[in-house]
Length: 299
Image (cartoon, rainbow, N blue to C red; front, side, top):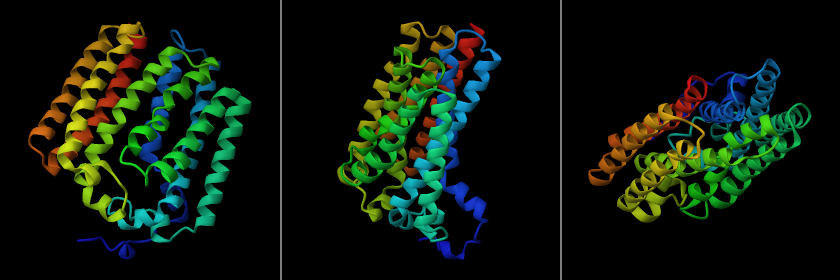
């Protein structure tokens, strides 16, 4: 049974444009970037560093929001076929492609100028490269071409802590790359759990998502294997000396929990369990990075 989106009330123009930015996704991106900023600064930050971090967060938010809006243009036909995305203003025809493209361009230019002038050029170029990676390479090329789209395209989604680190230091250190690796490995099991219980949506859209092309059992096995590798990667901040026992305890508990969900999902699938696994993956990344933050200041 499909939802008749035409019967839904039309939101205000402001809410329509705001919806294009995919607020929940952007919040997680900025949070991960902020973690990179905090970890790049030994001890408590000075007020100038706090100001720099605030400007960098705003610039990253603007460019990430621009990429999200551009994604809505490219995928408006696909979005209209999927219950999860049919409410988007572009899918419902509430905003034209010209309006959305102009909105995306303004956000991208504003964010890039902010980062280049008030943060540093490296952060601006890395953020712009992330925009291109997500909006063009992933959305336009990889997503409709290969079931490994989320694996390859996950590199763009893993960039926020690198951007945050670069904003505060002007370079990219190994610590930033460890954070990148964690998000890169977290993305496939997180997204495939969603794709499992939304498989019919993806089948209708024509996108070659892994559950559509290789089936549920193969996808569940991939989720399980990725959670094992992710567990190991999440120990690297402790091994490298970025964190202490507080973070290690959180990483072990969260990693074990994610692996357990993946194991249950592999052994006895249900849509309800896939939803729980997807939700736990969000808790996993958020609490993991929050533990890094607490560890940085408390120990």
